[in-house]
Amino acid sequence: MVVTQRATRPCLRLAVLRVERLTPHMIRIVAGGPQIADFRPNGCTDAYVKVLLPVPGVSYPEPFDLQVIKATMPREHWPRMRSYTVRSYDEVKGELTLDFVVHGDEGLAGPWAMRARPGDELLISGPGGAYAPGDEADWHLLAGDESALPAISASLEAMSPAAVVRAFILVQDDTEELPLSTRAADSRIVWLHRSSGDDLEKAVRDLEFPEGLVQAFVHGEAGFVRELRKYLLGERGMRKDLLSISGYWRRGATDEEWRIQKAAEKNA
Image 1 (cartoon, rainbow, N blue to C red):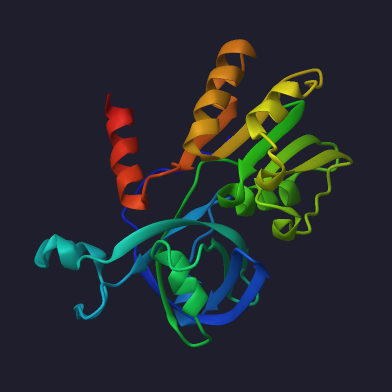
Image 2 (image 1 turned 90 degrees about the horizontal axis):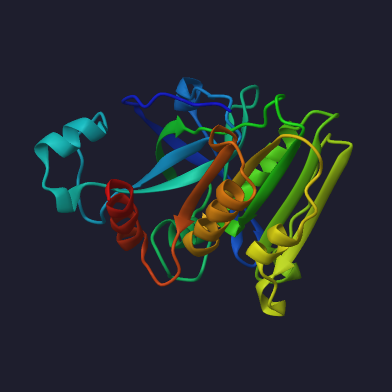
């Protein structure tokens, strides 16, 4: 288990290099530029950056500094922030890759990704993160939906050849599946489809657990995350320190509403 310490991180001003439509609802943005040299990987396969989306029509002081902006500008002018997993980082090429789930004009970052073109500016801060496959575990469980797919993909690639992996990924249908690779000799990857009524929680509950100590990564919609937390910690008796689990979003709630709800639940 990798745990990073929170600290004030500078904002990096990158440029979009390439845009690729991976599936009907997934867009890949590859960014770089001079400031990519200041990006510091943290070893987490769920490493994430905050994507900063300036408010249209608002001018920001230069050099761009989020702390200065928060100290000198009204809250409604602060850039909107969204968290996105680092799909990959290539230090030699100076490229950072982020995958965006898009649903038409819904949200902020998705529509931005749909409109993005080479040369567009991308403001980020980070990375943060807290998970990477460890050697202590006898086997690994990965479970999530589209929002967790970049982290699951990166985690599969980071597995050792001796790793035992069981992965469950929920997407809309087979058009949303992506090629996945792993060095793990014993890996089983199961794609589940909402359009067919597949249930991620049920799939994990029906799994015949391999013998030994399990390390798990379970992220995505808050509903199944909550149920799988109870199942893995309560019924399965998993070690809490080997479980990375979090709701990235909640059905029926906007990003802002979910962040408020999540903070309230954490402090309750």
